[in-house]
Amino acid sequence: MSSSPVRRRVVARGRVQGVFFRDTVQRRARAAGVGGWVRNRADGALEAVFEGEPNDVEAMVALCRTGPPRAVVEEVEVVEEPVEGIHGFSVR
Image (tube, rainbow, N blue to C red; front, top):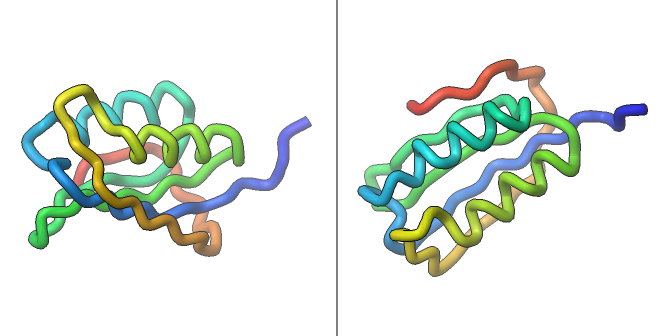
């Protein structure tokens, strides 16, 4: 029995660009069947939106708290948003 999908917007700050963060997030989200997108922001942060099963989305949020090996995540902001029904995951 599956639960209702959830949506989270995550903004990670620190050394999060140029360390394969977007690629890592995209690969793991696709493997988990999580919809959404990830992008680098002009202010140096990484922003992502995840939609899917609660456990899968929370796993993606947890990934953003640590990032790939070369990342140094200093701060993470997580906001719950209404589900939009996104399918697939992309890098913007």
